[in-house]
Image: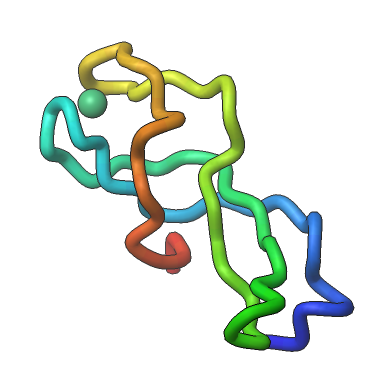
Length: 66
Ligand SMILES: [Zn+2]
């Protein structure tokens, strides 16, 4: 995916909650990685896990939702 076009775009993806060790749906954001010249997905901050209600700031993105 071209990072220059998609950077900052938000969508839903699968994220892994480190507290309840479940994969849940959450809003993710495309962020360009200048070092590796590719686009990464990161979790949009301020969200809570729908299963355990803990912050998803520490969660990491597993992949897009579909
Ligand atoms: Zn959780």
